[in-house]
Length: 523
Image: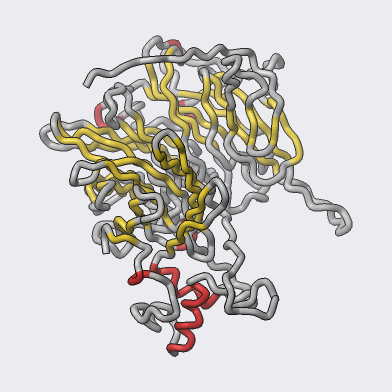
């Protein structure tokens, strides 16, 4: 039931809770149902610790493959009390006190009750649980009070998408959920897309908090065929989950014929004029198409959308699972006005050891900050295509510069993470798969992790060697994540501050002084 506190007797996973039926847990007998509910309630019915005692609390946590923990800070006066949220492939969302690890509560989506029977260690089939990305946002409720919402999909665990009201630190509420059987959401695939949340202005005096969500992953690959699921973009009321607009290639509120492939990435929301409201958002699909949507607020419509660009040629089979990176800059391509800079790198996360494709980094330049071109016609052919881009090291067309691209130097080298744009520079991490030895006595290597750097303006190298874009490389310790940049508060400079996950690159950047900015706002 919407807006219902989760941790009340009605919803407790306990063997004595008769509200859960045998059908809910996909078993035939009451004995089996009670047995599985004991496990769901935290009992060690499978004797995981092998101490021959099953009537005890289970000291274990399910695996996490594609999800990072998420922290929300709660304040009591001036003191912060952070809570760490994390999902697991056992099917739970867990909440822990960050100071001492105390378990505050767990929430299991209803559809995972049927998976409990597979948690026996003798079962060798992999079952995904709550595997989607977490994201929180403060919104205004219908009563006008502020709420802290936690949004998450199930990732590889299913097509559902959930919203919890976690305003009260230890009293979470179920807010709403959707799946591909909900009216209007029939294109929703596996919910791997991370939600983006913001506020739009529907009219001069009417604002609304929205959730923008990619359609997710079609479980029936291959990637080169047109998908039946996931090729949609959904905009929902952030408080209620009500569908406001759907966007797809057909039978949607807004139809874009080219939107034929899964949208697994996170939408990027932009407030271009800094008035506190979303003006534009971008998202890419798994085939490297980039779409743009705009809040237009005309007499006929509020939202308009179209395709901006395509990051691969027709005869290629590249996969783009990374989020795009969007920045606003000026002076690119010979222009003095502000422009959107959209960066996207390719890499098949579903087959990281593939050594057949040559992947790339693509940077699109969109000259239209405050309103899109008529009919989203960026070129005479409509969208921006690879042939419209300049390969790094080439001569830029100052009159019609649409962007540039960089071919990764090694066949099979791929990027698995969003780029980092800072100070008109762009950084990209990659993995080059190993050529493993046939000698079984030699250790298996993950491959080589690398970090590349470019001038955002034209793709020129940042290093003194103008022919080398490589800033750092070393043996990989996993799939390289997005480059991180850390500032030094004492000196307000950036130096040796770019890392890739646990890897310290020790890159010697030029010092860039950062200035503190202060302001006040009249109410």
